[in-house]
Amino acid sequence: MKNKLSQIEALRCRIDAIDLRILNLLNSRTRLVIDIGKAKSKENRDFYAPDRERQIYERLTERNNGPFPNTALKHVFREIMSASLSLEKPIRIAFLGPMATFTHQACIKYFGLSGEFVPKKDVADVFDDVEKGRADFGVVPIENTIEGVVSHTLDMFVSSQLRICAEVMIEVSLALLNKTGRVSDIEKVCSHPNPLAQSRLWLKNNLPDAVLFDVSSTAQAAQMASEDSSIAAVASLAAAPLYDLRVLEKNIEDISNNYTRFLVIGKKAGKKTREDKTSLMFAINDAPGALYSMLKPFAKRNINLTKIESRPLKTKAWEYVFYVDLDGHITDRKVKEALCELEGLCSFIKVLGSYPKSI
Image (cartoon, one colour):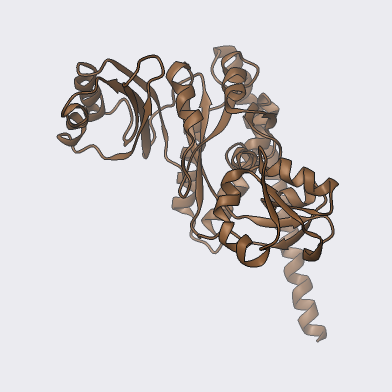
């Protein structure tokens, strides 16, 4: 036993020495980041460069031979870059709040813990904060794999001049939370309508007598549960410590592989990376074969359309605006040619942004 402990202690000493080397290297890296920030300021360049972050992730994961996993590697460098960026210029991010919602989790996943996150009551407020310069970026939900598109977000893009800078995917994992930790205390279950719908079968089988009550967000549900022991919330696990709640059950969603896609919005277009997506909107007059004509420029150039969604154009009756996601960047020759051809066929067309695909 003594020799075994001695071996463990020796290994721990080596780990301690490596930790100190990592600490010194982190500080050396941070000093270089500060110097870059000063150079950017002199040249009047943007402090935040998401394309550069993407390059760092790709380069490191390609060269990682393990055993440290690539997923964890990305998380580690996400926080390193987030903390470094906060020393250059703190980034202010408006999001559909309140705290501990899935949108908040998407903010942390993309910007790291060192971002300054500002919760807003609705999607329109997020757009307004970014448009008026009160926030550098915004984060809003766009679609869920089960519940479908977030129509209000799509509608905001019709009149807004903001660009899509990035996308973030979050796996939706729902938990049942309450104050006491006792199922017998629950009389009412509260949540946003979508999480309630996504866990309806579980709730029916396990809490058949509880009243289901819609509220504006999972975080509001958690707040209500923290104030009333007869209320349980369907929310994220992140809400439990924030609102001092007990976790009664994890993973109560009825269908696995439930993801929500979020968009990062800002004022400037993104630079090309190796894996990009472009989003656009266009409107057409209602006529036989009109939509076929609009999609033909992409089909004949073998451009993959990953999403198409229609919304009524509110300024004109019986006209529709189509939201399209496609593979490629606006600077790609094939994409430029397709959009040029499409422009001649539309009553309205708008490129919402080219941005890196979620990784």
